[in-house]
Amino acid sequence: MKKVLGLTAALIMSASTQAFDVEAKYNQACAACHAVGVAGAPKAFDSAAWGPRMATGIDAMVTSVTQGKGAMPPKGLCMDCSSEQFKALINFMSKAK
Image 1: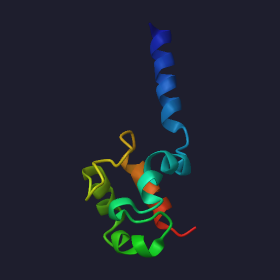
Image 2: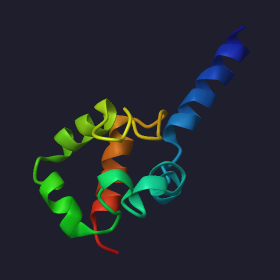
Image 3: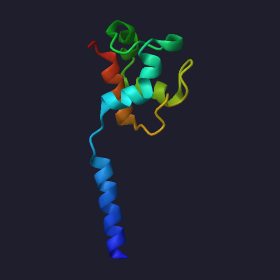
């Protein structure tokens, strides 16, 4: 039993410490709408489009994502993203490339 608990704890810790690949998650969950600006979504990497939204603050942006906004459903297409991951995705998309 101790071995099972130890293995389970190790797996959980390993999964939680894996690096978050923001570009891969963007491509998986965000690009479908943000690459072309579907239904008024700000285009990724267009800092002018993101500027007014970012002016509200990152916490307000995360709230918009988690609650949904306009045509974007709650959590967009990233049901498994945490608040910290949403912050990383927003920061990634809001900066010009």
